Image (tube, rainbow, N blue to C red):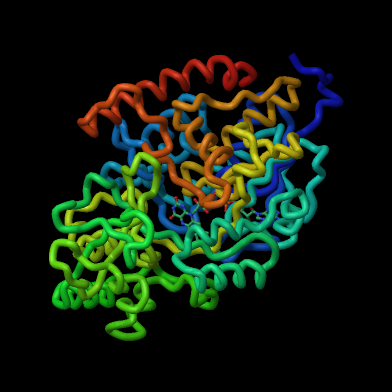
Length: 474
Ligand SMILES: Cc1cc2nc3c(=O)[nH]c(=O)nc-3n(C[C@H](O)[C@H](O)[C@H](O)COP(=O)(O)OP(=O)(O)OC[C@H]3O[C@@H](n4cnc5c(N)ncnc54)[C@H](O)[C@@H]3O)c2cc1C
């Protein structure tokens, strides 16, 4: 099918040998396509990486749940069927972690590096890339800590700073201004991403909360969790005592007023939270006719209203600590968390504006984006998009038209989100059942619903992979 002879076949240039870039390189190579893989470490490092190895896991060592019929399992199952190198290596160096797939991070990165080095079709260049030739088939996989010069180059290609995403992450005008200041003080397109925790709607005790909009302005869309002075005191003390994620120096330096973690706000005084994210004014509880002592507001995450985020509750606590402390909030005693709060530097482009579902740029179809920078969140999601970008880039080299994965699959749901989410409020997403299409037939039982969704996803995935994904793989 190739339109090229072996001699003049173009190679794929991959920038960044992190999770996405390493997987993408492998997928190209196993399709007979030559790759130039450029990685700046160890010549130049990032604020979070510690080694020169490829696919280094910068924080936790977990590749999330391996329990059958969970969304992270579904994504991994599709990756397994697609022959993901990194997933295979992860399984080979797994450590005991209950239902999760966790790895020995040092062994994992070392084995990925070895596998890539052994592959004759991949030429590794240890250098920082600062320019992109839009005529050359290129995968940009430089991650959330993309070096500044390249971030500027990406901006030149049309990827403007996603300040709208910063707006989405913030609560009010002052925060928006602070986030924008942060984005402009730092070169081109990165800013500090503050992520508030998200809970599943049906895990909220609706008997303990009330719907209201502040000062009754607009419709009563927010769920309000009211606190008495006593409940606030218990929550406040637990928050101050909770363990934070270890901070690296660069993170410490760069906190800014607009997206302070709640535990930092709390440290400023016992009542500071009550004048910030837990402000009760204008939120009269219709059941008592009175204003509570403090309020935690929950905002709907998606159209289906099956998940809510805790407004202004970005934090830097360890995940276990978050679950413990946030379950002290009235109504959230049995909350199931879809995502925990986080704060970290994050570079990503505005996927819905710039990308097709095949991860190709709309304006420069020979340039593809993969990993965190394309608008997904998480290790597994980064590897999965690397896999897809590798398959699509190889198709371009081999003279075929890249075909996006089906909407019903986990792969397709991720790329559908990246290409079609609300551009104004775009933020990177993990794989969750929220991203998958709802079933035509309503199934009330959660477990059964997820089982049926996974079954449908894998059926669609297999059909696509047989046509588009596997055909050129060696
Ligand atoms: C501080 C932090 C903590 C995180 N913790 C977690 C976590 O615990 N769990 C989780 O699931 N996700 C986490 N993430 C999110 C995300 O999953 C990881 O960042 C993941 O590594 C992203 O994969 P990637 O391939 O997109 O980028 P990376 O794995 O970061 O790979 C990008 C590579 O590109 C290289 N590079 C950058 N610029 C250039 C250039 N100009 N030229 C050449 N090479 C370049 C970098 O050196 C790097 O090797 C975290 C992110 C950050 C920033």
